[in-house]
Length: 290
Image 1: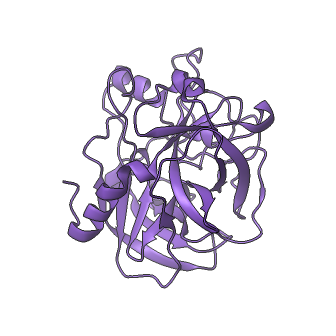
Image 2 (image 1 turned 90 degrees about the vertical axis):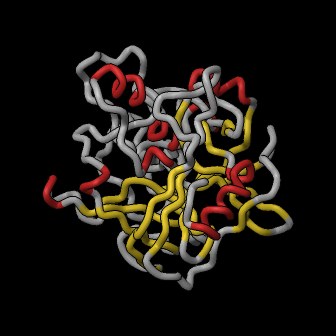
C-alpha cells in the first residue's frame, strides 16, 4: 500500500515544471481485503466537463463515523493555494491532481461498506463539507499544526455499520491496519486503481521518522514494512484501524508521506482521529466547524 505518496508532496528534487502526482494515494505491498471493515468509504466525484474519466472518480477514502457523516482528509475536499510558488510548496506535501479541477466543479458522493469501489454497499451524495478550522495547506511543524481533517455530510442516513472512534491516541508499537483503493505499483504512477479494497498491516512508529513530512501535534507516523510498503495516490483520507477490545476502531486517516516522490519508501503521516474526537462529535451535532 502506498498511502504515503498520495498524502505527501513530490520529491524536493523534482523538476520545477514536472506536474505533482495526483491526490489519490494507493497502498503499496498490500493485499486484497477479505471483508470490508465497518464504515469503509470511497470518496468520489463527478466532473464530466473536465473529461469523461471524471465520473465516479475515486479521489480519497474515509470512514463513516455516523450514519450521515464521513470523516476524511481536508486536502481531499479543498483547493491548493493560488499562485505557482504557493501551490508548488503545498503540493510538495499534499498531492494534487496533475490537471487540477476546482473543488467547486466536483460533485462529491460516497460508496460505503463495499470491497468494490464501483459496486455494492450504499451510496449517498455529499450535501455539505465541513473543514477543520485549523487546516492549512503546506503548513506543519515547527510552524503549526496541520489538522488535515474534514467531515462530509451525506444527503441521507445510511444503514451501513459505522466505524467506532478510538478514545486514545495510537502509540509507538501499536498494531494498525491500513485500508484503501490507492495505487499499488511501486513506481507511484496512477496506472489504474484497484477495484477491490486493499489492506496492509503495519505499526505506529516513532514520530521522528516522519520529521521530513513536518509531522505535528495531533498526528501519528505509521511504519513502511520492509522499507517498500505503504500508502500511495488514492489512499488519502483512508482509515488506519486498531483492534481494541476485539473491535476495529479508527485511530487515524491518511494525510501524507515522508517521501514526496515514491510510495512506500518512507513512513506515512496520519491525522490522529482520537485527537479530534470532540470536534467530530461537535460537527455531527451542529453541522458547524466551530
